[in-house]
Image 1: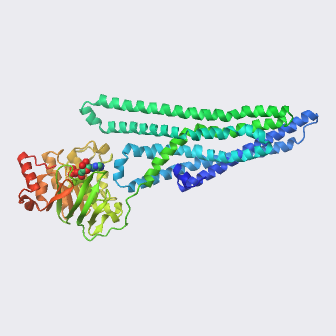
Image 2: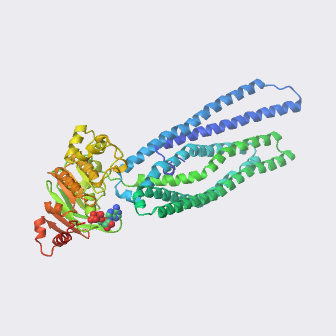
Image 3: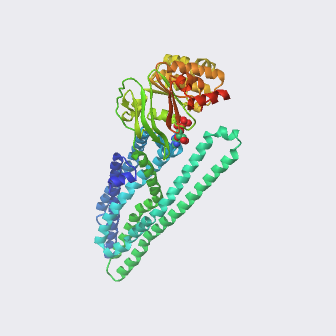
Length: 581
Ligand code: ADP
């Protein structure tokens, strides 16, 4: 009952399965003790009826009092245990599931985050786990405990009087068959509702993230309408889901309760024919309400159980995705980066084909080529942000696919176009480059990255909060902060994506100065957009259609008749824009 399938179905940890077993155990005990209470009541009533009919005085009241007292005490203790086992233990489970999810995500290849976006993953960590939490605490122990205790009670009832037991319990299997039969329909509804819910969160997130662009382009109405449509659609799917589930659940509940009517009918018939005593019917009627009660609770939560299974499968999908693993140590001989016949595709479309080149330590290697030729992809692969499926990439002779990405990345600094800044102070944003760096180290790096003069103008200097994702800073300032981070880290390999579009001339010079300090003596792989950078590079690799089209020093390539690079350089100088991207 509590095997691997059960564990996966409800996304439980090993401890979670143990907790469910404990909750089930206590539910069985609680249900049986409640039945014991019914037994005491039955015995008291029988005794009382005997006294009434025989006209004798009531005896044994003391014994009954003791029995009732024992029942009350046992009932209290077992209910308390059940409460602890169901609600108490579950909160620990929620925490460990969230932490293990986050741990898992840390190790997933970046490609995975393209398949499931941020709203979707947030929904899993928060919404799905919440939903599961409710099921773990409110449903599993109760439901499975009720299965077992009902089976025990059914055996007892059948041994007491099989005809009444049948009249009383026939509805339970019929109700469950109906529910299991409708599971496919209800699951489909739940899936549609879930998808519609994610669309709504996606829509809200997209609107908030792009609020500036939306306003600047007067698109508010269009975006609001789209969002409204998504919310309406979600509401409709929820309503139809609830309706479909409600019909089946209520039908099941009614069928189960028909047992009361059939018990009364059968009981009356048996009493009239003198086959059973009135008190037996009385006992069955008492028991029947207790048999239905836990199932009623489970029925009310059946929609949630179905939802939770979808939530669990979304959660398990994260757990089942292969993580990027590797050795904990990385001891390369030097830091030359060697691409050896590398091939790569994001989805089906081949982006890189047999790419081979070497970026030497102490040199600047510039990747050049038209937009979409695979420059950024090469840079990402060099840092194992994606795994290389064909060919190998070696750093100092070590295949990077064999090294744990976290260990590997400690040797890399990345200065990319989309600088990620946190809603914290300038100081803390730079300190991210090196865990535990002192304030003086941070300031020295900031100075070398030319951050000094703009930080001094901020109201609280280095302690100024910079807003969500650095909203209060200009493009050039953001970039200099990310360079300061990289300087602080001082890693032997620098991957650099030059972005000039947003920079004015003064900023550009400042960024250039900062960069030249960062790059000295490192293995530098730069996605070059500026002619100046390209000309100053030690080596140029020209990519076209995912292949290396040309390779060599700037002077070699400029001297090549009909060379691609030469043509690009000519075009650029004619347009005077000096922008190659
Ligand atoms: P470049 O940096 O030279 O402009 P990229 O390496 O960014 O080129 O992109 C190469 C190709 O891969 C393009 O066709 C682009 O659309 C595609 N691509 C880039 N990133 C992704 C991604 N995350 N998922 C799917 N396709 C991508």
